[in-house]
Image 1 (cartoon, rainbow, N blue to C red):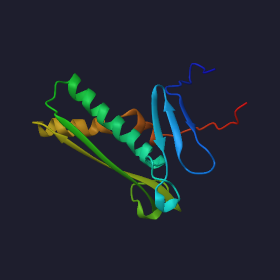
Image 2: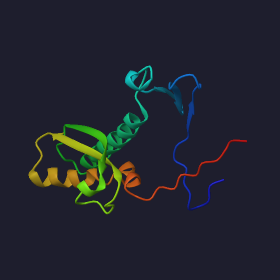
Image 3: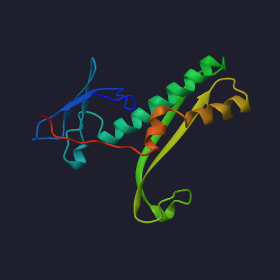
Image 4: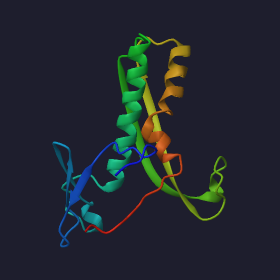
Length: 149
C-alpha cells in the first residue's frame, strides 16, 4: 500500500515468453507490443524499450507545451518533438557532473509552429524541460524490484 509520500500514477503489465523478445504491454485498456530489431535477434513487431522511453518523453514534452500554450492563449499551432538516445563517454560531456566512464544521452529537438513572438517561443522552450517525464529522467529514480508472490 502506498504511503502519503508515495504516489502510484500508472500500472503497466508486460508479458512475454522466453523464446523471443516480443512482449505484450497492457496499460489500462490499451494494448501495445514491444520487440527488438531484427539485427539484434528480435522480430521488429513493435518499438524497442528505448523507443518507448523516448516516446514517453516526447509525448510528455508535447503535452506540457500544448497545455501551457492553451492556458496562456498563445497562437501555437503544432508541436513536433524528435528525440534520440545514445551512450557517450562522460569526458566528452562538458555540462555533465559525471566525468568518468559512459553515460546515457538523450537529444531532444522541439519544433513549434504558429505565429509566436520570440518571447512566447522562448517561454515554451523553457516549459518543455518542465514536463513530468523530463523531471523524472533528470532526478534520482528509486526502482524497487521484487519477486511476485
